[in-house]
Structure formats: structure tokens, C-alpha cells
Length: 410
Image (cartoon, rainbow, N blue to C red):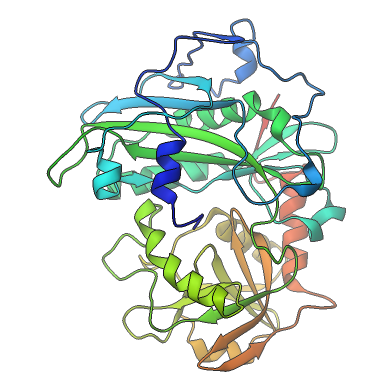
């Protein structure tokens, strides 16, 4: 979720002008009609585009030193439309900067949405303790699987409606993600070495002076290989409850994926990290009594056979990993609750863990509240490991997908 205090600056640096070059090296006037009625695959266009990567080639990256930072890849996907129109045609282009008007809606009024990234990790079940990434995967036999891209598309549409923006259809979104992953597949790290982080963005790029929806919008998908999100790697997280700051308020936009949710929590995160904590666990804005979520992920508590997570109430993001873990937990026979969780319930919890696209499933070792440090089980038989093993097994094709959650890219 939160990627840094220079989010808008990095956004400007990751886009280039409204008109892209029509001819590129090894890439000539490639366009895709993502509004087709079938889930087309990028290989359909193999006679029109010469990708730099071959089936067995990896990019020149020191995978052992990979962190969670931007490593530009070869291609990005771009599609545009006006305020009163629909998205119709997109294209792959070389990854490059774009120029943007100083009066763009995104720069002046924060009009943009990201459904949060899909991630293409190369993971085997033996590597679960080495990496925390989800969504789209390369299996051990070389296949590439996207994990629930339609759910991310739905979430973008929901956010776009809240932010008064047109949105790509589910079909357009899935096609764009598939094409971006396929074009950048040489950047998917080797098994156990990291993930290909795929970020879709919907941005108000048209110029606007008064407070109103922008006249033009850009849908963009780019990718970067990454490894662990938290600097702790696989070590349990130590969270801090900061009662001064809240992440979202009732009636606001905290329940949708908009870029305006992120910068306001940076100060709380910086203060927590200065005190030696991993991240901040926020309480509700009204009572300062109930758990909401962590800056970058949803929160779960475990007591015996019962798994609880805060209910979706307009201030909490309905993460795709959260949704998947809830269903997997039910399949495993756990009693699952979505409810208001008083902060005092932490004292009785056996385990606490977080879920999110970037963090995957991460155990929490302790939570500090009002100078009281509450510690949780992090060794022996753990619920989060059981659930995450199943999640990763589905993502990597090691467990048969009977739910229809994965989409294969050939």
C-alpha cells in the first residue's frame, strides 16, 4: 500500500507524455484491442512484436541482492480516454517517463486509483519462509499464473466510481495485466529469489484548474522485480498502535484504493520506525477502540479455532489476499469472523498475522499499545503458516485450483 513519501513524484517519473513514439526498437506500432470479448493472450500478437526476452532468458539482475525498490523493466501498458468516453484501445510501450501537465487532476487534487499490485513470484512451498508475495506466479515447470486478476479489476472499478473516473472493464484490465506480465517475463525472478510486482494505475492526467473531475484519464500498468516488503524479511513484525493518527474516517475514501489514502499515514509510519517498530496498527476514528488495519495490510487475530478480522465498514480495504485467506480458512475448518475487534482482544490472542498483496501473509510477534507490549506465538504449529501454504500452493500450481482463481499465461 504505502510505498514512500514521494508517491506523486515517482508517479510523474513513471509516466511519459500523452503521445508515445510510434516506432520503438524491436517494437513497431503494437496496439491491442483490450475490449475484445475473449481473454486474449499476448502470444496472439507474436507476429507483430519482437520482445527482448526469450523463453529461457532472465534479465541481468543480481537476484540475491534484490530488495523492495523500483527496478525498471522493458514494457508498460497504457490506455487513455476522455471524461465522458470509455476506454477502447491500449498499447504496450517501452517503459519510460511521461510528461504531464502541471494542472493535471492527479497532481492538484489526487484523482487517481490503484487496485494495488498483482505480484508474479517464483515460489515453491519450500521457499515460503523466504518470500512474502502473491497474486501471479511462475510455477516450477515454467508456467505463469495470474492470481485473481478479475478481483483486482473489480476493485479498480469500485475505486474509480468513488473518485469520479471512468474505468477499464474487467476484460480490459485482465488483458492489460496479462500483456504486461508476458512482455516483462524475463524480469520474473528465479524460484525463491523474489517476485514481479505488477502495478496498475488509473490517473486523472487531463489538466483542470478548478475542483472537478479531470477531462482525460490514463490507465497504466508497469512492473518491477522485488523481494521482501518489510525490512525484517520473514521475521515476525512488531507493530505499534498510535492513537494520535487514524488511517480513515467514516464517509471518506478509506475503503477504496485511492492514492490519497497513503501519504497521510507516512508520518505515523516514520515515527513508529524511529521507535524501532515495523509499522502502525490503526484504530477506528470514532472511538479509538477497535482495530482497523495496518498501513500496508489487513490484520487477523487467532484464538484457538477462531480467526477474526475487522469487518468491512467503509474505512477498511477489502484486500484480495484478505478475501482469499478467509475462504481458505473456512475450507480448513476454522471458525471465521468478520467483526468489530476491540483492542483489548489482543491480550487473549494466540496469534496475529497480516495479509496484503505486497506482504503476502506476515506473522506479528508483538503489538505495543500505551507502553504495553503484547507478544504472540511465532513458533511451532502456526495457523498463518497453514493458510499461507495453501495460498502459495494455489498460486504456484502445486495445489489444483478448483476455485478458478488462477489465469494461466501461455
